[in-house]
Length: 333
Length: 269
Image (cartoon, rainbow over all chains, first blue to last red; front, side, top):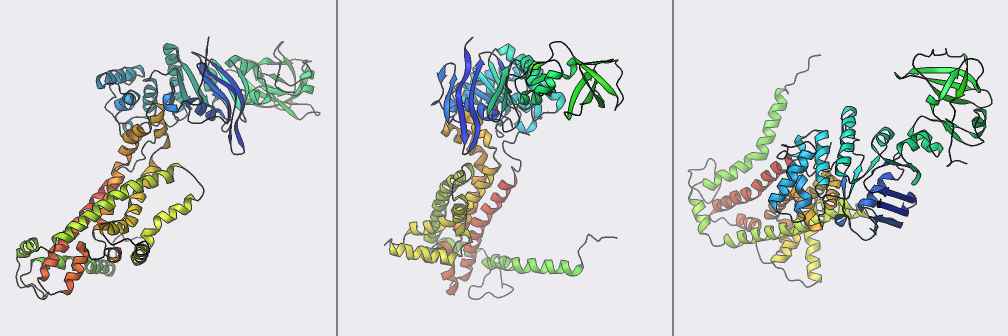
């Protein structure tokens, strides 16, 4: 499989700020790729580097093997769904969708047919005569999607595509985006700060921190085998164990991550003892925080399976990790 | 406590008197365009007639100033539309050193007393050996017309979401196509309003014009000269009605144009 987009040691500095700092990335053709990170981590700048609205300070961005350095944004076979949708307020929905064809000089009848086709693809058939101002947030999002897809881009960029939608709509749009991507088979690259969104939609996730890529991998990799403390902390609710504590849990002398659901609270002697703290009922279990000994003022989260009795706060509990659950974070020394 | 929403009688009377003081003279000017008596403005007019409109139409000395005023206003407005829009685009779309200072310099001509603008232009023309002509009047008027267009355009540019320009580029449009299909339609009513106001301001301008016109007369200057002469006085009033219509109607249209479109163009949420 060829690479749709390739970052080769890309940096982008804004004055003294290193927004993107030595990024190497390969985005496979046909994949649903997520750039995940907190605000200011450089993910949006990376997206703008692909679309061509920003240029790298150094390094190279290859789109389907070709250096994109001197290709202006309007000549790239890449289209964007903007965060605020950026629909043209004075045009009808149909004209918005057909815009990309119009500026290329496609004749009116073809434009109209193609726009209608795109509108039915995003389930907005019959909305062509309306103005963007008459649509709901979710509908505008679909128009923006149809407009970006009309030029048949090889890569579709989505900047926080679901950020402005309410929770329920966001979940159904996640499913739809995923289905659409599989149906069209084109590469989707989307930027998000929502780890749930990244993990549920993407095939590959790149976690950004301070302009660098902290880890690239499948959602399972990222979630179960975080490479750094930052990834463990940002992506999930993994416990981050310093080397000394890792040894107590029977692991190596290194930074490790341990998922809360991979720890059992056992009767009698366990590997580590602690004091039960507050408990929170999650439905699919109860999350219990456990304070560990005097030497380290540390707190560990444990998920108790449904049915298991919740220890009262203040009682001493013994903890036992499941075998193989302790994961060494290669990115931490 | 009971709060009375109605203003007191005294306040209402004051407001009515104030409005009458402001607007009654204008009504009188209209009234005396129809009087039968031509030497003095006696009240009430001894009789009403439409003959002065005919007389004004016949007067050969009115036409050149009217033509000059229209020409100057049209050229100054066209100039202001181009330069004011470009300036507004530069000021809103880029940040550069000294931007705020330049904004102030652009706005200065409207704040500066016309007499200062007029004097400085006159001495500048003299220094550079530029003879007075229609073009010197146009330049004088363009100084404040640009500000009007700039102000209207800048307000609209700010409301325009920046990403719609990027969206247009992203979809394959070049700079001209983006301007033609995305920026201009969203700027249109603001430019029309700015242009109308600029035209109205230019059409009745007196102070800057007296310094930059040389031997030519625009319509307002013709009126000023005519007031001194006691011949066919109501003709001046007829011309006043024409000037009023030529300035008031564009301002009224501009008001309605800018009142619409209060929603942010391109705002997605």
